[in-house]
Length: 137
Ligand code: TYD
Image (cartoon, rainbow, N blue to C red; front, side, top):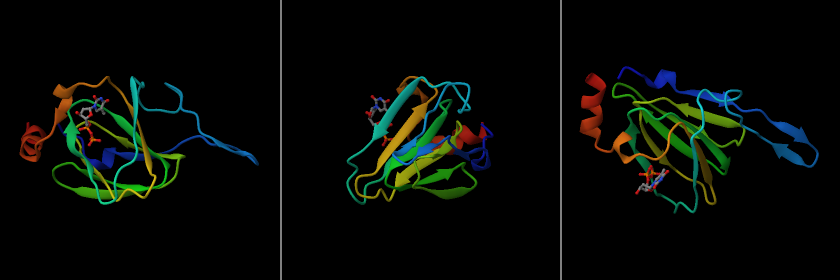
């Protein structure tokens, strides 16, 4: 699996603005690089907690800080990078084969995740050594 962290990009999401506030709408095959099969969100993350700590073999995700802020550490086995997400109109596209950790959640932060497939435990790599072995295959 040759995907590198450079394949993970920040997408500027559409924003409809008026004086009463903003709307960001995401539509399949228009504003996203994959078809959405699942949506989930992380919330009530206690201060100092870390989520993620795994990679996916095939799943693609778009991660958005719809409220508050957090950091996403991405790692392709060679190189790591930390991306700070703090805007609801900005999404981090994570391609398959990338180890990720989500950390430094602000109080009340909500992490929205759009995913390209239904939940499947067999798509997870939860052990870092297994991840490195997967990368050299
Ligand atoms: P996990 O993806 O490991 O959480 P995180 O990466 O945020 O730390 O999922 C935690 C638990 O929730 C695990 O037991 C599987 C379950 N889960 C589902 O049942 N469906 C889902 O869509 C997700 C994302 C998790």
